[in-house]
Each structure stands twice: as C-alpha cells, then as structure tokens.
Image 1 (cartoon, helix red, strand yellow):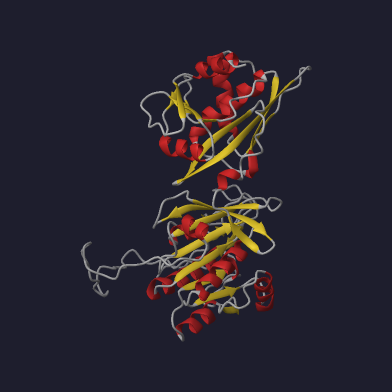
Image 2: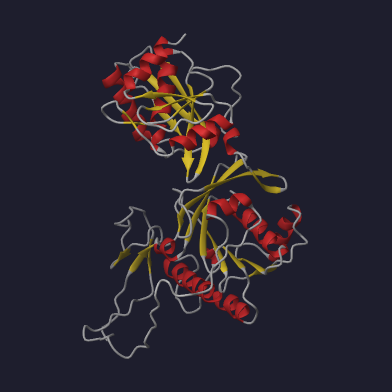
Amino acid sequence: MAKPKRRYVCQACGGVSTRWQGQCGDCGEWNSLVEDAPQTVFSAKHDLSSGGRPIAFEPLDAPGEKLERRTSGLAEFDRALGGGLVPGSAILMGGDPGIGKSTLLLQAAAHVAKSGADAVYVSGEEAAGQVRMRAERLGLSDAPIRLAAATSVRDILTTLGSMEAPALLVIDSIQTMHSDQIEGAPGTVSQVRGCAFELIRYAKENGTTLVLVGHVTKDGTIAGPRVLEHMVDVVMSFEGERSHQYRILRSIKNRFGPVDEIGVFAMEGAGLQEVANPSTLFLSGREEPVPGSAVFPAMEGTRPVLVEIQALIVRLQSGATPRRAVVGWDNGRLAMLLAVLESRCGLNFSSAEVYLNIAGGYRLADPAADLAVAAALVSALTDKPLPGDGVWFGEISLAGEVRPVAHSSIRQREAAKLGFGKAFGPAGPSAVEKGVRFTGLDLLPKLVDRILASA
C-alpha cells in the first residue's frame, strides 16, 4: 500500500488541494483550507472484480410496497415538498440564522406526533430546556415529541436502534454532529459528509423521513461540501428577511415532486402561520393607478403568484454617473432590458437613475417578467400609469420581440381570481380565460406606443 498523501479541503466549497494555500483555487475563499484525514491510496494492482457479495437485480415492474406520503400538518410545507413527507427520504433545509427553520420543523414534528406517529427531534445547538421553552411559546407543550440534545452520531444511532424506528427524525443541525471515527472538528467537510451518510443510511433502511438543518454561508449557499446536496433527496431553502413578516420555503431539488414549488408563511407570535393566498401579500393598496407600477403573474413551480413590480426614474441635472439599483431581480437582465428599450424603442435612460423593486421582498427568476418590467420602466419614464386592472407577462429578446412563455392560461386564471380584467402578453395563439380580455403584443415598440397613447 502506498504512502498516504496529505490533502487540504476547502470548508466553503469542498475543493481539494494537495498543499495548503491562503486562498482556495476553486471558489476564491480566503483561509478556508483545512487539513483533512489522509486518504488511503491503493496500489494499481488492487482488484475489486472478485471477493464481493452478489447483489440481486429487480425489474422495474416488480411488486412492492407502495410508499404513501405522510402529511406534516402544514399545507404549505407539504406543497413545497410536492405533497407531503415521503418515508425513507432525506431532506436538507437551509436558511439564514433566525429565519425560522427550527420553529417550522418543531411545528411539523408536533403535528406528526399528535397524529399518532413517532417523531424525534435532536438538537445539537440548543439544550432540551431551550427547545421546550420554544414549544411552550408556540403552544406545543402537549405534543408527544421525543426530544434530545446530542451531537454524537454514534449515540444517536445507538439509541434509535434500540427503539422502533420513528416516522420523522429532525437533526438540528448537521454541522454540529460529529463521529468518533472521523478526525476533525464538527462542521468540517469530512465530519459533515460522514455524519450525513450514516444518518441517511439509517433513514433509508428503516423508512424514516430524515430532515437535516443546514447552516448557510455569507452568500446564502448551504455550508459544507456540495456533495451533501447530492446525497439527500430534497433540498429546501427558507428565504426572507428577519425584518419582514413573511417567509418563503422554496424547493431547490426534489426527487419526488416538482422543483421551485414554494410555501408561504407569516411569522407571528404563535409561530409560523400558513398563507393560503400569497398573491394578496405582494400587491399593495391599489386604489389609484401609480406611474411605474406593473403587476406580473409569476409561476413558482405549479403555483401562480401575482407580484407588483415598481420602477422609479430620476432625471439627473449634472453629469454624474446614473445609478442602477435593483431589489428582487437580476441586475444583468435589467441592464439588457434598458439597452433594448434604448436601441429598439428610442427611449433615453442613459441620463437617468433607474430604481427597480419587487414589492414585499419577493425575488423573481421567471424570464416572463421582462414585459412587466419594461412596462413599469416606460410608465415611470413617461409618468403615465398603467391600467389598474391589467397584468403583464412575456419574455423580451434582444431584437425587441415579445416571446411566448409557458402557463399563459394559469397566469390569466390567477389574475381573474383577484379581479384583474386585462392581460397583456405575447401575440399568437393563447388560451384566453373567461373574464380576462387578452391583448397580444409581438414587438416591444408597440408596448411603448400603447403607453404613450394612453390618457
């Protein structure tokens, strides 16, 4: 056997280097390389083609036990998961500190325990008394949850092996767990990877739904090795500002349901409360139309959400460089859209400051928002309000064309449900919903002409 080589692992991205250096060559993070346990190097003559145990193959249509989802008691949580908790699945939930991850999972565990199933909550960050104090504040003191404060994976698995496998196992958080078989402090790449592997294997073998709480880095990504996201079945992100009331639970990866599904919650004194109709949250009081405001029907997975896009144009008198400030949208896409409006429509934004905001702290990634953003910018530039009962959706190309987008009928149906009677979108064959008057636009200059011609 060859001599083991030293290696250094980046704590931010999981990159491996053969020598220590101040900056990681993969992600550029400083002072993040830590020496990992030596990796065993086998000789080239080592052969794995014999000596193993034969495995059994099964056809796809082999009869087996059908997995039935278990409800968590929170409809918005189940929606983001794709319908509920799948037995034997591993869920990784990340989010900023204080956003409400522990509160949400404690409420879900309480509902599961009250329904007659067994729920285990293991906290590695708080003492049992602190978790009990939070449960008392949430009114969940009577929930028959098995609560423990532990950080040793060996102790946790030994205890679980001596009892009947629970339906739900919550580990808060995976960065605090450690294994005595792995060198390194808790939170290092090797510890997180090894502890997660052992917990996931237990969940798969016993049909337990495992939820791992993950810390996040300063740029919002889940801390630890990126392989952790590949090991689990579902990756969820709990988003929102601590100063705002509303929280969004977003599914980033889901092997059992659609991706980008969201669940909306409101943080109140009694915990996280579900928001059944989030469209009303992101629309401000619209008694009178205001210039620079456009409503966009966004699609989050299979759920339509109406959000308000607000734009403000400020003319500069001096020769100062104009600012471009964006909240909730992509800076690069705004720059591209301003270039198309100047080049194809003859509008002048070069001598004005442009401010764009998605109301309610919402973050948009849907390319169909281009038309709504363009309408808000033109409305703010000309100081002419858009129709108060209209919604806008469509993707804009560099040639100034309004391209078709998916789920046009679902967007219009959600708009009609909230009292919007007009819809502006890509021209061509489109399903028109009852109660909505649809207007097709094929070129961006036609949008500008329509706004300029309005009273």
